[in-house]
Image (cartoon, rainbow, N blue to C red; front, top):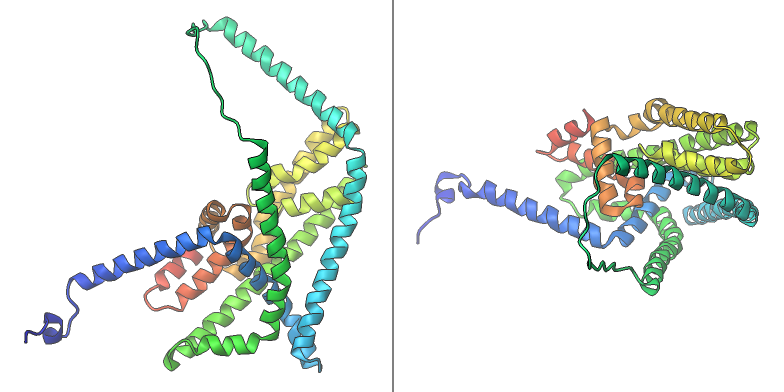
Length: 359
């Protein structure tokens, strides 16, 4: 019976590393395909994990003061639900008031759009007088395919259904994650050999600190932006300063596009109050200043040192996860990448990847 060279020499055959690399690439591709097509399920689980890590310190504090863990978990989930319902109700009443006054804003938007279109037409006319027009072949029939209303409504209905289903499952997942935290951790550690359990435990604890710091830091930064935007809009005499301040404060957290998105609500509300361009320029400048201070001072000081990612890694993560999961990818892209960095730091052979992400 012939023996393989690896048995005789004690070395792996030359094709083994190449095979291992190919297997890793295939496995990575399978995982990415799964994450893409199971986006709604993955998003629901990730949101539940982030909320669970955010509420876990309070549940542990309640447990240390004599409350049973499952009861403390239930109390925190119900409290979170009540706070969210209260905030949504308060904003909903302001939104209804704004919707009742929408015709006057709509009229100003239409007039502004007509002014822009007339200016563009005049520019196009001037350019056409300078450059000779190309002769278009006669008898050409243009056929434009438009999406039917029914298919559009079904598509939107499907996305709304996904959101409703995710919102219905998240509270239950958060409760079970909080109530059964120790059992889940023990079962997770049992998946690994005894020699690796200490390292896995350290990695999981560090992932928990990263995720908790990210959520708490973002909540703090969002609260600061909402308060600052509301006070600024109130000082400007803008209608619905609380509604506009909340929307602008949340949108200001969107990386890179936050300046444009956060300026849209006050600019629309100002159409019925401001005549000259001065106030519009002030609003755009202040929103840019808020976004600049957030990205360069608040976010690095409050969130950046907790996730331990460099600017290039954050940018690439937002691009990749935003492409993978859309708007939700922009929300969870940074904590997912930070968790990957922590895992790479604790896996032998993957340390350079973790150092690159945090360099």
